Amino acid sequence: MRLVLGGGGGCGKTRSINKVLKPLLKTFYGDRGVLTEASSNKAARLIGGKTLHAANKLQGSSSLRTVHLRIKKGEQKALCRVYGELGAKILDEFSQTSAKLLHADAYRTTMARAALYNLQPEQYAQPNQTWGALPVVCVCGDELQLPPVPFESSLLAPLEGVSDEQKDRKTSCRERV
Image 1: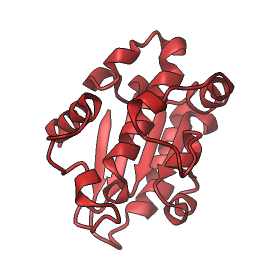
Image 2: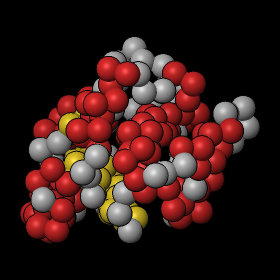
Image 3: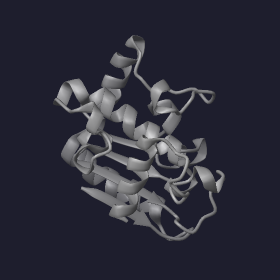
Image 4: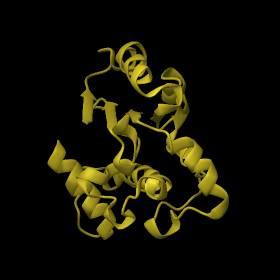
C-alpha cells in the first residue's frame, strides 16, 4: 500500500501520524516494524523518528549518486537491523526533501532488504519493489510548501540531464500521483 497524506500547514498531518498511523501500524507490525523518517531534525523529532540521512547511514557530505550508494560491508548489518523486520515506513515533509535523497532512501532500503526477501536489486524502481517491497509506505507533507532545495533537485524537475535511475524514480512517482 502506498499512501500520500497531504495538506496545508496546521491541518493535522503530524497529529495523524502520531495518533493514528503509528499506533495502527505498530499494532500490526510491532515496535521494530515501523520506521518514521523526515528530512530535517525538527520534523523527525516531532514524529519520533530519524532523519533520512541517519536512517540510511549517510553523512551530510555523502554523494547521492547511485554508484556511491552501494552498501559497504560494515553498513550491511546495521542497515539490516533497521530495515530487515520493517513492515511500514512513514516519510514526513516529502515536499522539503530533494529527489536525490528520496531516491537514495528507496535504493538503500531495497539493497538492505534484497538478500532477506529475495528481491531483484536492479528492479528497485519498479512499483512492486519500491522501498524494498515494503508492504506500507506513507509519504506525508504539504505539496504547496516551498522546498528548501533547488527546483532542479525536486521530484517536479524536468527529466532532461538526470541519471536513468532518477528518471525511473521520478516517472514512477509521477504516475502514482
